[in-house]
Every structure is written in structure tokens, then in C-alpha cells.
Length: 410
Ligand SMILES: Cc1cc2nc3c(=O)[nH]c(=O)nc-3n(C[C@H](O)[C@H](O)[C@H](O)COP(=O)(O)OP(=O)(O)OC[C@H]3O[C@@H](n4cnc5c(N)ncnc54)[C@H](O)[C@@H]3O)c2cc1C
Image (cartoon, rainbow, N blue to C red; front, side, top):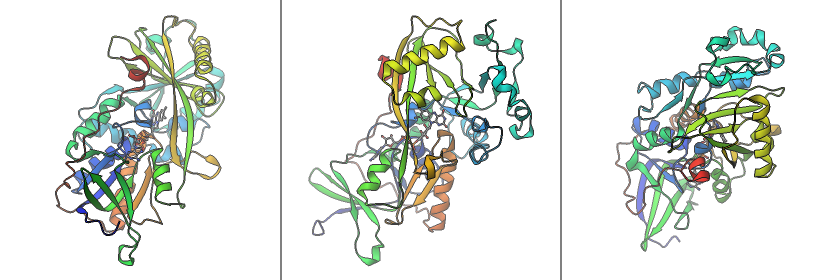
């Protein structure tokens, strides 16, 4: 290997993984003057990002036990941050992206919500949550058969494919498709290089070596395989498996909300997504999807039908099409499999020029970028004025299809 003469390429930061975390970080780094590029192996937004429900929440749903937890404190400011970006006034420009809703609802039986009344009215919720009076309920809850209480959260829901597109459009010339059959990590072994790594490419009989001040791994569940390949033991990943349900129908009302049950995870979460024809998809998550991860697709669909019949018996979904999406959430490994309460970014002990990062929530991507930039500043990796390395031999990855485009073919 050492006798090969490589074409030498370099950049300040090379990001591996083009989901929301990598794309957001790329935008932040480029606007801070870094010579940053991103590699995606499949389509931009694949895996968790395109599978997400697009809810940018301030953490209220994590306070269902009635106390503010670390999780809710870390993300409390995120909706305002995203809102500024959507308006073109934030540190990332999302002006081209679409907001599906400026609020979402929480509803439940009065029995469940009565235990939380004091909390819901307390300062802790910082005016982000209000009780909805009967005459102000959305159409879907105007029905006489609805007996519970309804609260409105000011947090928003974004059209995730449009967010991915906006982030990618801002930095098109810096995003490359990586083919790992022709690419491999190179470990420097000399003392001077401090165990750093580089990326070696072999294309059209030419060898290229890309050196980066820092590689940042934002490959979601793909981080696990990369860490293995790099021989890293110090940082591990955990998966939280889900099986989401998709209901495609012509029922006209869009709805975004959590139904609270007896547990801390919402019993059911519904988000509505427009399809290319005039129909829409209700995308169902929450406890239904968590418990459904172990079940067959038919069993989860049967469970979803039962839940909807019980919670909204007045809605006729008999002509709807149904499908499921098994998908894992990828997170840094925690003691007792706990849910991480903020974005994770850390340098890898074994390879000092590699940072591994998981946002753990779409909402927390701004937090992840801040954490990575803090590490770069600490490492004194400054922005160079160099131009983008010549990676002409790599193509541009497409945007990921939505789960409903894949499932229902529209
Ligand atoms: C069903 C579901 C619903 C969710 N809903 C919400 C929500 O409403 N609100 C919220 O805040 N969060 C939500 N989340 C969490 C959120 O989606 C994730 O935290 C976030 O999308 C993770 O983004 P990411 O960029 O780290 O990873 P991913 O979105 O998984 O992206 C990883 C990218 O890396 C690429 N990749 C993988 N391996 C490699 C490799 N070796 N080389 C190059 N590229 C590679 C993949 O192709 C992919 O494009 C949800 C998650 C799920 C699963």
C-alpha cells in the first residue's frame, strides 16, 4: 500500500452520512468558512431522517411524568431556533422548506390528563401549551363521540423531504456519493500522524488520498459499521427498533398529535403527509410503533386499526391502504438503554481526527452542530480558505424517497 503514489486531496472537514445531521452540519461549517464536504453512500435523508414524523418539539412530550427532565431542558429552545431558520433568519437557511403545521395537539381521556392538570398549567410549560376549548377544536375532534381533553402545543411539524432538499441545495457542489467498494480508510502508523486516518479512493485506475483536519461520522446506524472498521471500542451505538404504520386515505383533515395513555411514551402519535395524488398518509408512531417492532406487519396493522377505532370511532378508514415501515432509531449507547437527552458528538480516542455524532432527534440537529463546532474550536481546527477538493470522479447522491412513495408507489 505504502508504495502506491496517491493523488493527494485535502479539506478541513469531511462529513460521512447525508441525513439531517450531516446536512445541517455541512451548512453550518460552510457558512463559518470551513472547507467542508459530505459523503453519502445512498440517497440524502435515507434511513431515519426520511422516516421521521417531522415534529420539532420543545420537549413537552418528555415531561409526561410531570417534571422537567434533562431531555426537555436540552430541547426547549429548539423550536424557536428552527423557526428562525425557516424564516431565513437563523444560522442555517431553510427558506425553501415547508412547514406542515405550526402546532400539534395532545389529547387523552380526562382521567389521564387530570393527573397532569397542575403541571400543564404551570410555568414549566412556558406558555407553550394551551387547553383547546370545545368550539376551537380541529374538525377531527368536533365529533360528539370525543370525550377527552385536548391541548395545543406551539411546536411545529416540518415537511422533512423539503428540509433535506433545502439543506442539500445550499451546498450542492460539496456533496458526493461514496462507493465503499472503491474506498477504504487509511490508518497512518507513523508517530507524527498521531494515529490519524485518511480516505483512499480507487477510481478509473487512479489512487486518491483525502486528508481531512477532521472526519465527522453522521451516518446514523451506519456509524456502527464504520466504528467497527476503524477498530474503535471506546464508543458504541444502541438501536431503538420501531415499526411505523402508514395509512393512505382521502379523509380530508390533516392532523398532528399525540394521544397520551398511561405510559410515558405517547400511546399513539399521528402526523399527516401529503401524497403526490390528492390523498394523504397518516403516519402512526408512539407506543404502537415501539411495541410493534417485534410483531409482523399484519399484526401491527391490526393493532393500529384497533387503536384508531377505539380513539376515533367516527372516522371511516375502510377504504384506506395500509403498510408498515420497520426502522431503527440509532443512538449513542447509554447505561440501562436510557434515552439520550441531547445530541451526542465526541472525538474518538483511537483515531483523534474522527468525531462520531448522533443527534438522537431531528429536533436536536442544531445542538449537534454546536457541539461539533465546539470540538473543532477546542482542537484549534480553523477554517481555511482552500477550495473544494477535486472529487470529479464521484457523482451526486439523489434525495431519498418518502416511505409512502416506496410503499404505495406514488
Ligand atoms: C420513525 C421515526 C420517527 C421519528 N420522528 C421524529 C420526530 O418527529 N422528531 C424528531 O425530532 N426526531 C424524530 N426521529 C428521530 C430522527 O429522525 C433522527 O434522530 C434523525 O433523523 C437522525 O439523523 P441522522 O442524520 O443522524 O441519521 P439518518 O437520518 O439515519 O441518516 C444517516 C445517513 O447516513 C447514510 N450512511 C449510512 N452509512 C453510511 C456510510 N458508511 N457512508 C456514507 N453514508 C452513510 C445513510 O444512507 C443516511 O443518509 C424519528 C425517528 C424515527 C425512526
